[in-house]
Amino acid sequence: MGANMVDVSLKPAVHREAAASGKILLKPETVRRIKEGKVEKGNVEAVASTAAILAVKGTPQILPLCHPIPISSVKVSFEYGEDYVKVRVEVKSKAETGVEMEALTGASVALLTIWDMVKAYEKDEEGQYPSTRICDVVVERKVKTGP
Image (cartoon, rainbow, N blue to C red):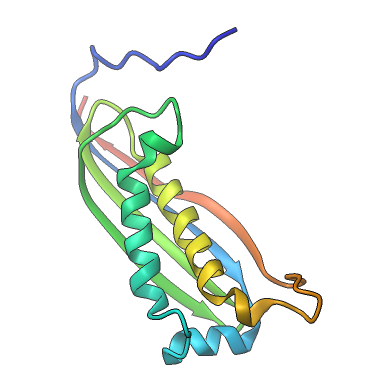
């Protein structure tokens, strides 16, 4: 059986929003480095935000059955705990289909970017990542305004 893209041609373009979030569990020292701007690769929030925005815009190239839709807005925010960074991505569009996959893709890529930027501080003596984890990636909210 093959794959098919859902036909949305008869649906009206309406305002849509979605927010997705996820966490990356890190060593407390790594979280401190991020907050203090002491990560060798650069400003983690700036790079992860840019990666999230690019991922949102590129979702149809990453997920084969997602429709290319006009993105009106992407907002990326960060929350810190002692041993984690939580990323939240909010996406808005006026389209025939929702933006939850775009929000999930943005959050996931932001988390992967954080991992890439701090991996040197997370590795153990064998080069493994015993405590680094990406988790709790969820759609927090989805809104459709109109018919």
